Every structure is written in C-alpha cells, then in structure tokens.
Length: 231
Image 1 (cartoon, rainbow, N blue to C red):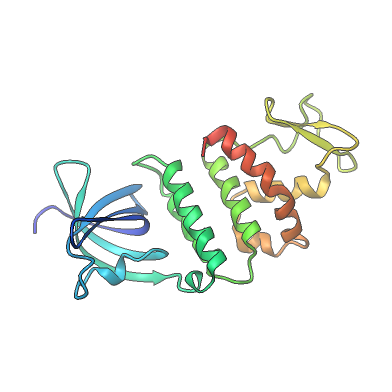
Image 2 (cartoon, rainbow, N blue to C red):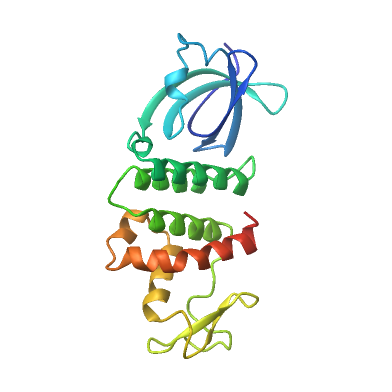
C-alpha cells in the first residue's frame, strides 16, 4: 500500500469507536502525537490488539488520511512495561502521567517528550523507585522542557544561594528569598537541582534520603507545574 509511514510509539490514550474500532493516540519518537483509527482492534482475532495496550512501546505502520487522523495498518510490540499493571497504585500513577503528558504537548513535539515518557514508564515498572520520586521528577522535567526551570542558583536579590541559609520561594520572581524559618535548605535545593537536570528517576533514587525529599518537594513542584504549564 502506498503512503505507509513507519514509526515507534507509546500509547497515550484509547477511545472505543463504533462496534469494534478504537481511536488511539500515540506519542511517537519522531513526530510527536499521532492519532490513528485501529479498525477491528476490539475483535478477539485482531492482529493489532496485543500491540496497542497501555504501557507498551510498539513499532507502527500507518497510512495518513486526508484529515488529522491516520489508519493503523500494523503494529508490533517491542516492549511492555508489564510490572506496572501488577500494582494498583503504580497503574493509577501511570494513567495520571499519560493524561498529564497528553495535555502538556502539542500535536507536533520534539522527541524529548518520548524519552521522558520512556524513562517514566521504566521507573514505574521498577518497584524499587518510589512513586513520589517519579511524580515529582516528571513534573520537574515537564517544566524544564517548557523552559520554566526555577532559579536554583541565585536568590531574588541576585546573591548566590548559601549552603547554611534557609529560603522561601517567590513564585512571581521564580526564585528563592531568604527566610530563617524557610522551607528550603541546602539539601532540598540540591535535590531540586538534580530533579530539574537531565536526570532519571533511577539516578534520583540512588540519592540518600531521596524518598523523603521527593515527598516534601512534590507539592512545591506541582504548584509550579500548575502555575506555568496550566496542567
């Protein structure tokens, strides 16, 4: 068939359509979000069904239609993060990350988001990495990619952040301000630097006290995400 396009994709969302079809949105490694119709995929003998499950990476072949939706021709499963669905909390966290990413990216996006999702699902697939680390890191990375990394080097007055001082955060200035009773000290700021760097949850999990820091910092990073990304 002429006009076939090959790519790799991770399922972001699935919606039943008609009696046996399904509209599926993938995050691809080369073209951002891709929405296709998988005809007959809900039938028991469908050859597509096993490769279009959530928490899976597949090699896709599709034909682009005249509008915004293509037609899925074939799909071959290349990786399934099967441990995620064995734990209810990790499954629900996975759903939340997929929804969050779906809302955060445009139809055409850079492959950075694909790598981000791959790292997130890999972490969710490992029971050794806490959900707080994964969620907080994911929000921090969305902010970083969108260009909203907070100032983690200087205070609002331009002075360098001091290792023996404590700070609060000024959301309007997107920087810290000195406060002897502030919520942020040297350890919290160091951990924030790691989260906003091009890191992975696995790397963060190796930091001593990472679970405690992630728990404490998750509300702060989530607030930043709500304020600057509106998601």
